[in-house]
Amino acid sequence: MLAGFVTSASADEPISPIKASVVTNQGEVELGKKLFFDPRLSKSGFISCNSCHNLSMGGTDNIKTSIGDRWQQGPINAPTVLNSSLNFVQFWDGRAKNLKEQAGGPIANPGEMAFTHELAVDVLRSIPQYVNEFKRVYGSSTTLDISQVTDAIAAFEETLVTPNARFDKWLKGDRKALNPMELAGYNLFKNSGCVGCHNGPAVGGNSFQKMGLVEPYKSTAKAEGRIAVTGKDADRFNFKVPTLRNVELTYPYFHDGEAETLEEAVDVMGRLQLGRKFTATENSEIVAFLKTLTGDQPRFMMPTLPPSNNATPRPKPF
Image 1 (cartoon, rainbow, N blue to C red):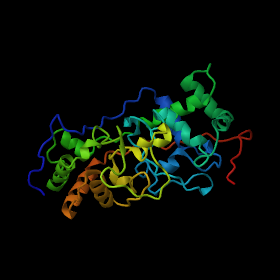
Image 2: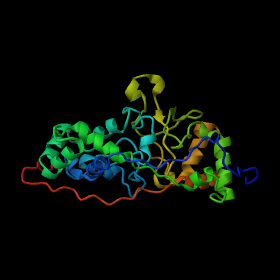
Image 3: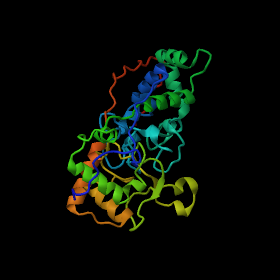
Image 4: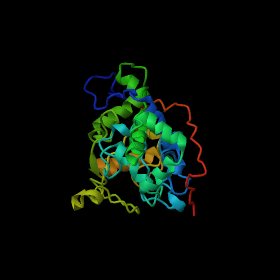
């Protein structure tokens, strides 16, 4: 399958390089980073945003469905937080229009962090260092509230982009960035129709699609997709197309985490979405291409969280 592969990038490629993030308010980002890693935003005092969106593991947790409060098994696979700012909506069913709106969801979800927004804010207000930091970022005349909390978390998440993937370098004209097998995989990826859904800088994240266009997708998961938001039966099993950026790091795959490997995911997508059975060689070529989408992972100093004091409400793990 090496014959006829793409040899150079052009302006009309369906995928475009990721641009590095531009920070306009460093204080807000630093505050959001602390909140992202702070488990005190959960009822148990054990679960943070990073628990399910681990920045050392591709921005996810690498298990089928995430573990929430009191070891509850979640109903859906945790999507990566990396490059999430490039998504046109948030969550698999698109129920949040942006990162700020998304950030408040898990805190108050009884199956995830299991707190309430009011109690989370009470915890933060009880910690003088947090109170002072919120005032520095948002002004001394403002009151610490959940809007500021989610705003700060979103500001930090917006910095979690992963530029400089080898494929990006190829798109920018470095013909040595990819080998012939990887280029053959990209050619297959384009010519087979994968780019119909997986395009743009995030290689996805910009549309809803039905899972199982050609053949029905059989899953034991309870999640039914976009219908949970719209109530329309036509939206049943319609999910936001996931980004393929860093996809070699974000296993297992699909909304239910049923595909354990990239090879399995490529095979299922070929049959169910495209009506095509890829040969073993074709599958290997596409997988080789997908691995070139891994970019620079976030690098930053881990935050030191402000300490609780005697007035801080204690966690309730049981």
